[in-house]
Length: 132
Image 1 (cartoon, one colour):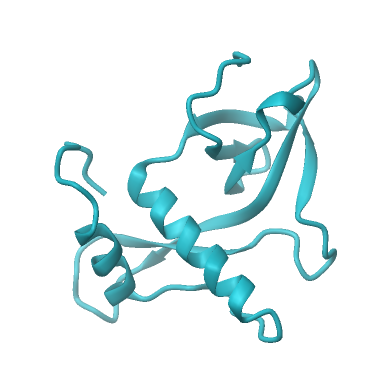
Image 2 (image 1 turned 135 degrees about the vertical axis):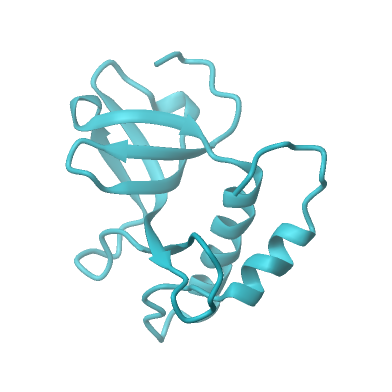
């Protein structure tokens, strides 16, 4: 891992099999730990009900309700890989965070709505050749 980070939004695959999307604090990377902020657990959700092929991405709170903390120190030995999040994933991540902040009194669980995906991805520029 380098100390130069191109975007604070990261996709992190943990050794235990969990995938999280979060912001990483650039100046807080030490030899053995990395500080993640607002981590959300990523889950693939089958699109059985819609008849569409493939899977949707669902984001839910990672550690909540066990703690109200929003930032965590992760040991680098527990991380399999770290990658920049795609533009579509960033937009969805920001949307879910906004929904969670706006509705603190209600536990949203998974925010998974096909119309929301379509609307968010339609707003992205078509310059990328990445297929989601």
